Amino acid sequence: MEFLNVIVAALGSFAFGAIWYMTLSKPWMEASGVEVGEDGNPANSSDPKPYIMSAVSAILVAGMMRHMFATSAVDTIWEGLVSGFGVGAFFITPWIMMNNGFSGRPFKLTMIDGGYAIIGCSIIGAILMMF
Image (cartoon, rainbow, N blue to C red; front, side):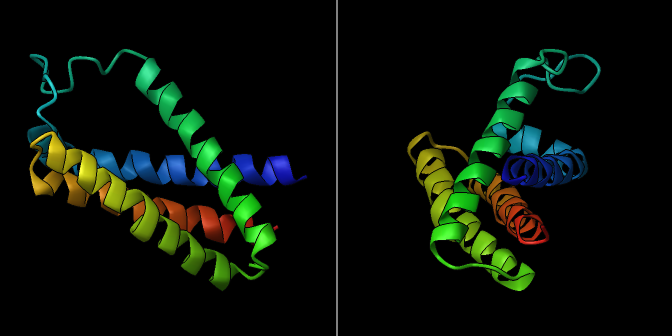
């Protein structure tokens, strides 16, 4: 049952990411410097690899968060939400900021990607504790 819980939590975060990045697609493309096709979409938008990697990443994050929560006695939806927020805000976003800083990317990119990490991990945390 825990494996299903991890998959559902990852799907929740992945679905939120789709909404997040569709809403912020233009500023994200500008900040990331991604190559844009004639249709205004990323040139690699038909390539399934980024979507597959994103799904696998969400599963890995959700699986590790489930393990961390089990060993830390996180057992309510609120605790899962707050702990997920902490993972996104204090583990993932600083790492994104460091990588973007060294590669000379605009801080706007850190805000967009970090915002997804924070909210996405909060969603994972809450969903993990629903079961």
